[in-house]
Image 1 (cartoon, rainbow, N blue to C red):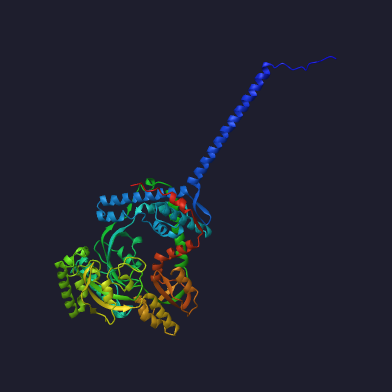
Image 2 (cartoon, one colour):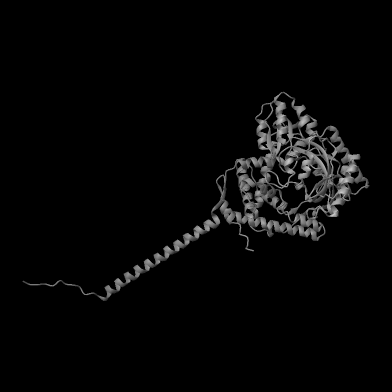
Length: 604
């Protein structure tokens, strides 16, 4: 048998080189692929991080996203706006057009245009906590809300309107230092509302003050001190759009030709009588470098302002300049006496304080054995003797700083608002700070007191000896409104009850006649109650901010508002409308993401 061996080809140098090349190519491909994968991972991570840090939505309005970068950009715009405003105010100060004190006041009030004022008030749109990012998000959410409304209702804003808005932003308007003297009609306790005689007395007093100022027999400051009260106020340097007074008085103030001119006495919507003067007038100032000095997307900011103005104009035209369904109302209003909520019956008193060493700030540190306590008691006893002979002297004595050591209520002649019993203690039942007049509380809530009673001096460890004129006592607001409801339910005439129980001076004297009201003239809960009640019907009691309201609908017509009502609505209707629009807006906020946009405070 023949044995044959299998032939094995001899490996050539070319095949070796070919295999080596394939391996090299394969390794290269694998290396490149690895690099590509790594780069892809890095790129993916970069994109993800960039998206999370910049593009990811921090909020949405009806599905329209607001990115983190948009919030950062708006913060930059707001910051640069504030800085530029301060620089412009500084220019006016350096030119001697405003005083250093006026500069200090207004430069601490940034973003003074109407757009920022409204947007910063729109807290509900973003769950604001007050940071720069919060304010920016409020604005951006407001922008989206109004932009969407404008788009849906055919309201457009062109480039020229944006340019006009930028010109308006760059102009500091006519500003005036405004001072007002006012007299509020005061009801004679136990009555709740001032009578026609009380109102006439207030008008006569206000006119008398004005006559003294015009005649030069008394300086403005002296008359303001004598008038006192919450209606007399120095409003500082302000523009027309930011003066929170009745529209007719604001118009009169900004019509004054020169400093120290005075307006006539005018009756306010709250029933008070006021007149005003201006101590300085600052002409409008245009900042020619305004736009180029600002950071961020200021054009978007200006366009948002223009959109808001366009929407506001459309809303005012729809509900003020066009006849709408309105209802004629009678109204009963019951106010809490004190600005801070409290419980229990309320008392009306006037007070003077006689402190050891005439220093009310250090009474608790003066030992009761110190001779200055005896001096304070002697002065208090002398005041009581004088006042029991003539209680009408109380206000004059209370305003005299050589007699009365108290500084809190001196300008109001010692008169305090109606105060619930809960407020007199150091703390209220809800844990808020009270007046710390526990001994006074025991005295003024004693039974049998009659109006104009001058009480014996009352020693308070933190005040000294307090002299009190008792003026009246009444139930708490919730009890007073319950009494009103009971009277109406048992057939009492609405106008008669309003005259007796309503605490709006002007309306009470007219049987609660509040005039005509259309949509957005009242707060939402009041409007809903009024427009769901048939003509001739009476609403349930409605509570808003501690104030109680009851309305009777006496007529309905399609009509235009009268001139006075229209002027008032132009200052308030849009804000009410906007609040209702926002309450129906779908808003989502990533509060954690928003908070992360605000840098942490540096460690001490």
